[in-house]
Image 1 (cartoon, helix red, strand yellow):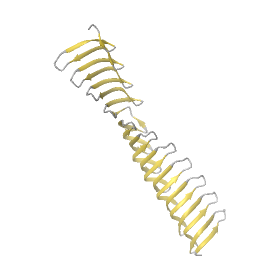
Image 2 (tube, rainbow, N blue to C red):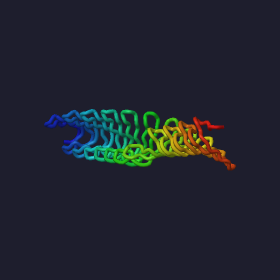
Image 3 (cartoon, rainbow, N blue to C red):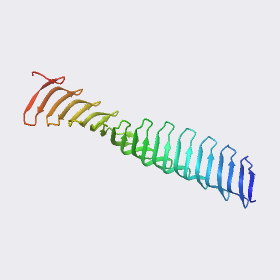
Image 4 (cartoon, one colour):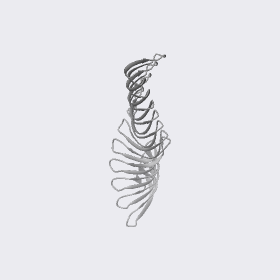
Length: 257
């Protein structure tokens, strides 16, 4: 049989479209007994070419089909609201693509066997952009996070978890290199302010806290104990011309002066 026709299968599936030499060949629509629908190209009885496919559970695919598999470039819209556009190999995202998650996140980069794998970029719904290497679906390796307010964080992620050491450059030019806790400088680090002042030492939730050394732009070095950004305890101040003052500070004020 050649030309247009209709074929009804024993299980209730139907094919409507073109035939050649008795086989489905050319353009056609196959409606499976489970409710899934394939509309596209056939070659010698096999789904092969460009097509639209709606699965019985509501997933929708538009793109290239090779030997009845999603293979090549296509777009898959899943029932959960996610949309993948890019390369497929044997029904899985594989190669370069873009995945839009239901929560608004956009993943751009490399995929392997359905998972993020290789260099990638994540656009978060709050405007933050994360550039990082992925390994089997998890961020793993050096990363750069650019926040919507202009701050930039550079660090390292392991199995999807941000490690507590990195570098943050704020939009106003403040640079911090050291340990972090829940996104804030915490632990040992070095903070360079826009006025040229450099602090090296202990921090607590972004504040000078513990033993530290501050070097001003004019070369004045203050070393001692800090509590919530102010000197509190024994400290030594060394001036660039050689003078050294030592004493006890309470809430930022030197005692006995």
